[in-house]
Image (tube, rainbow, N blue to C red; front, side):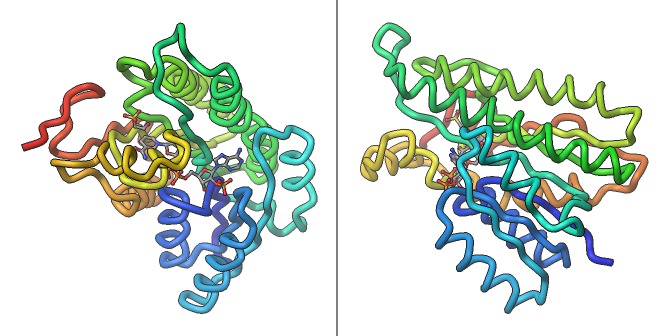
Length: 252
Ligand code: NDP
Ligand code: 8X3
């Protein structure tokens, strides 16, 4: 029987690339995100190209009731989830704390921390019932270090780092693997979202060096997910070769 991966935030960037890689490897997929049209288009392409089954479920992870009810209303056979990629997330703004937009703060905390928790609460129980599973959390270099004006985004990713460690302890008796992957700069829609559609400003983030691509992260997540049963990668930090740490990128 084919394995199942549930990927949140599959409408773009790293989540979409994960969908491509897991479909290539024969997984049936549950794909989530707010933009239903994108999910449906991706599902049709993956089904045609790889012959895998895809369920799409469109909801905003900030909405607790919608998140839980959309997941719980999936047909029973879709609840045999082998891999959960907790990927949905975003940054909004890049301002010093005293000038931060409070709505942006709420959006980041509600999405990156609370949304990830709502999904994990539901899916970890399915995994417990199934007696196995693997939760892969998208952290960030911003969850290991703090950079200028990154304040609240960095705090949410530090929270993911802590939750990743906590989940691993709690789920250990149930034989559920828990991993965090922490990328440096990956060129996706991330900066466009952070700068609220300002494409020029977003492009500048990746100028003068070769950033990671979404596919680099997806292939690494596949490596993590495909280790033997007795091996778990707890934590993985992955950077563009031109990036030493959160604040140091060599643009030459
Ligand atoms: P993208 O903006 O390209 O993709 C983000 C995905 O998250 C989209 O599919 C989006 O779907 C989904 N998403 C955002 N908000 C919500 C929401 N409220 N409800 C449901 N889904 C949501 O960014 P990336 O692919 O780069 O980001 C993916 C993850 O990787 C994030 O957690 C990010 O923090 C992390 N990361 C990114 C790095 C980078 O440099 N790009 C580096 C380190 C970590 P939709 O809008 O359709 O809802
Ligand atoms: C995204 C990468 O460096 O902008 O998490 O925080 S960074």
